[in-house]
Image (cartoon, rainbow, N blue to C red; front, side, top):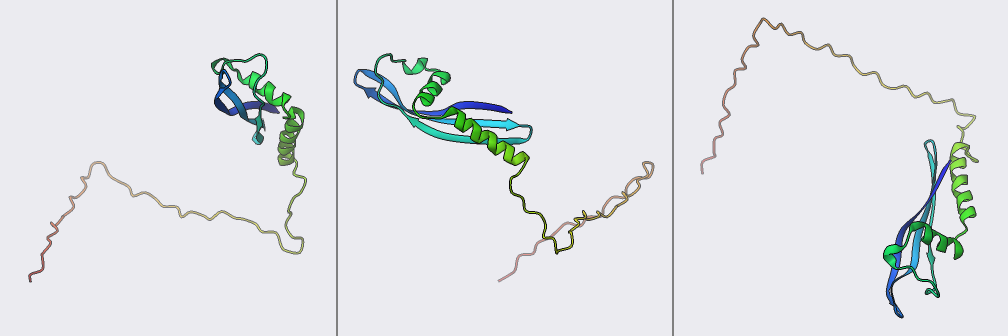
Length: 142
């Protein structure tokens, strides 16, 4: 199973005191996949104005912002467990809806398409020209 985290969007306050482009919210997503099955979980995480070290917006990395999310309440292991459970439930559904036992089974048979033989064309015999008559439209007289 493959799990991946991405930051989809950052909301930025243009100025915060002497700082510019301060990230205040990050929208994140955790995606998971295994063969043809997939799961996802997404959310947002808000941040307090920075105190101490500040990274200018153009120098931010996705890993850094994800670290902020994990440090501010995003439970990485619980979310990954949720995505894993979504995929496992697709592979082995915990609830199914079998056919009703008192009804006869329904067999779906695809319809037969009619078989059409293409006309044979003799390459040595020219195809007769179609006698076309011009279409004449007569305007009604008043």
